[in-house]
Image 1 (cartoon, helix red, strand yellow):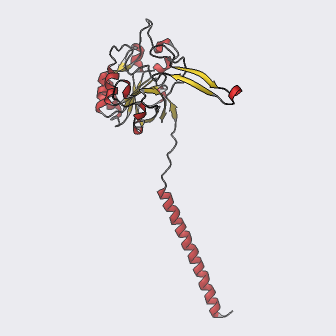
Image 2: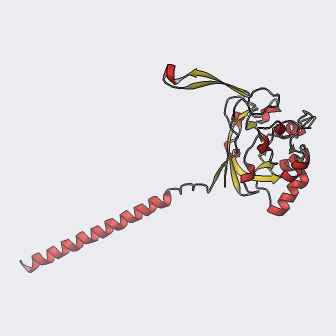
Image 3: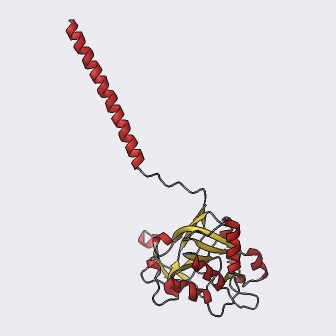
Length: 269
């Protein structure tokens, strides 16, 4: 082979290698660009706590009537599939109180802003007090004490009352005292007035109502909901959560014009 041919072969090999390295480098840069441009996937929470009671016709209600009734509309034997017809009252089970519940021009449940349904969760514990007084309430002083101990309540938070009442849900004591009168913990207006000042989007309770059982005027319902906030009643498993650090996910129903409705509530810890 002539010297010229050898030189030409070497040039071709070197050019091929350069193109190969250049191509690899460009591919690597492209992959890096893709990696940088691709958002990081959300990480799975360490624990997901279900804050929702199982809902059936035995769940306690304010008027004592079943809050949900089931009727078979189709079944496997006859139709090859299964389907229930449900008759549901909005404010039963673990459920949402929309502003429209106590305000003629308030937002209905389908109008709740999605960004207010995923929020930092603050838990105020009054379990010991509730053991002594069934109608005990979260007071403004409890909110201030929580802040002094745990730091500021985050803007846009949901604040939940933990009283231990959820454990009574299968007992008449969830609803009434021994004399048959409503008796369960709730929020005081002094507490919710303070929470209105610090941009809290919702309050929640592990009882039958935002107001305590012995309330004669529904002061919290009549001030909190018309202020454009929402409430959650009948929460479960709050004992499994820390006082701060959890995120609440509120699966609010979206039936048009609803004053509220049964919901699936989760906490990410």
